[in-house]
Amino acid sequence: MTSNRGAPARVSLPKATLYVAVVVAFGNSGDAAGGEPHFVDHSLLVAPEYPCTWPSHPFPRFAITHQRKIGPESAYNVDVLLIDGNTGTQLDVPPHSVARPDLKREKSGPLGLAYTDKIEPWQFGGEACVVDVRDLLDKAPKGVSPLVKPEHVERFETRHRKVRPGDIVLFRSGYSDKYYRPLPEGRRFIADVLDRKAPGYPDPDPDCMEFLGKRGVLALGTDSASMGPLPDLAEPTHYAGLKYGMIWTEGATNLGELPATGAFYCFLGPKHEGGPYGEGRAFSVVGGDLPKRLIESCQKKRAIDLSPTLSPKLPLTSPGIGTGNHRQVYLKVDFLYSKYLDMWHHGHLMDAMAGTHLVPPAYALPETNEPVDYEPEIRGWLDQYEKKYGKRGASKMTTEKVPLEWTCGEARVIDVRALSGTTKQRDWPASPEVTVEHIKTYERDTRALRAGDVVIFRTGHTDKHLKPEPADAGMWLDPLSGKAEGWPAPGPDAIVYLKEKGIRCVASDAPDLGGVDPRRALMTYWALGSREMVGVEMLVNVDTIPAKGAYFLFAAVKVRNCHGGPGRAIVLY
Image (cartoon, rainbow, N blue to C red):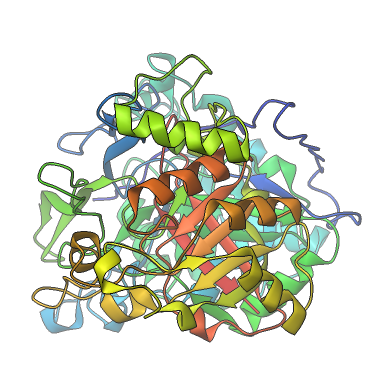
């Protein structure tokens, strides 16, 4: 059974008052243009009213629960997601069709263990080779997919160049651009095809997969709902490619924004343990010298994974301070058993801030400037904050509205491990504060921060404490309860200074950027949100980032009206 499904067709960008977007559209006939680099979003919007999940029984429907809203009971907007890997723009990896070696079946092999959490980060990116197959759109009987064959790739090669290892071959039919719409119109995306009421989406046949596999191509993408042609070639096509170790994007969109060659294409998604597929975010970088630099890094396998594996065995979400204040724990939800693969298809019930995740402005800011009925203590904190830092402000910038440019940039790692052990035990729960002076000292020792840099605080906390029971208390429980010192975290003064330097994104290898003192944490998040800055929290392996020449890439799943955002962070160098 193939499990791959759609996502939105147009890029949702913030209003001009927040951010000015210059979108440069390219035809499919030339190479990447010069000028300044810009990002192109290839991800479908994930929302309950869109056909973002595979519609057949028993695949679960996507759901977002706004579990807590800013008001008397919470200073933050907190969301919970029910999501499986076949949601929106998604990734397939070999275990989708290749059985584990221990099963000793016809399709068994070592690649049956290459789950989403095992794929090397360099394989997620490469040079986009856009194969134009728009002439196939709707050119088939109802319920049948028009087939992309080797000659379609050869046609591309005649016009441009031969495909080669390191390329990401993208099949552009225009299918998702045309048919990914809100329901009920959106039934045309998948459901009407399955019900044989409409022609199928164009897809490569097994011969095309063999052709690309023998060329050494290890990553593909399609703007169809799946890489599996209907009605009966889905599994043969999947296995024909996945047996070579391929990975691919399904449900991409906006491929018409790319030149035929020269753009850097990337897919990043949450790192689920044992995942045979996974939801995520696809995007490209076009223009200037940056695409070439990133492509070369992937070709030479110079990539570092900065995200922890998501597993129910690990303390990935906050237990809160006091009974009843915990965030949704990360749960694996089995729903369909594959006998041949001896594997459950599964989704996840998870807090929107499980693992490496985005902190958008709307996390701590209300939608409007109308007075918020905070509980009295927090009203007092707000008075103190506004006297020093100005109005807290409001924001509707949820995850899907944060520009991809904001969470990608030159990596600037500030080592703050020396702060550990500098608080008094009598003051716990407390986190050592990263101050403006710490940042200035780093700048004096290296170079001044520049607009567009991504500042990453290296605390060492997650690398040390993200462990399963019984060694899990050091991650959250002991610091929050005052049994241990909290992780170093920036205060609002540091955030204000970083904004003055033109920084949009602040990241940390700690559980969060706030620390364990709730008053100071809230002020830090108010400072981030009110200055239209974002955070990326819970990184790992920050110590392996080179001091120079490292480019940080993070992208969150494009969930509408989400106040967090699970994703994946990598560095290319």
